[in-house]
Length: 269
Image (cartoon, rainbow, N blue to C red):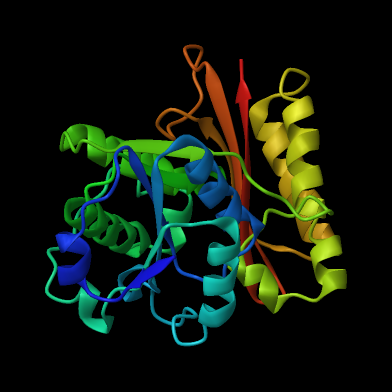
């Protein structure tokens, strides 16, 4: 695996087409690795990137303490057979025009108002520098991949945005680098989040959505979670569910022992 540490160097390379980009902030887990594996199986070459993007962290968030395991990450990528790893310069996020995303004024965007602006601004830079045929994301960050898909389509960027399934701990907890802040017992306990979403999904036709939402919030609060949001929305655009809705997103952000955990389930009607 070739490690690239400058924008100028990555611009100068000719990748074998079709090639895929897997953007990450490092501290790689099985969720990230599933994206790299998919890329290896379906594209000629795979470029992973590791960059802890300062633009997507708000005040009092964990930018300075975000888990960093670069040596371990390199070893994992090499073992998988990833072709390239791009580790941009520290000033990669400087002097950029911040992009205004669509679909960012709901769900995670309410409590993290600048988060998706920062994500989209950096992803846009990656796509314009590297020009991959495909860019791979996990569906745990459902709102994020929806925002990026809309932007790429609107700007006519010639990169396919590919969304891949959530990878979970044995307990059902969606894998995340922030899970490292939790003990093994905590991770097992936090499987209640996914259980709650599954129960809600199974009851969609049995009770009004408003009742199901209140019941789910009450369940998680009584279990010891602080709820940022739990919403049932149209999966196509994050708007309210209507009779025309053909796909529902059940999404949650819950805080346990100061760790913010997100998860979702998509249900086709």
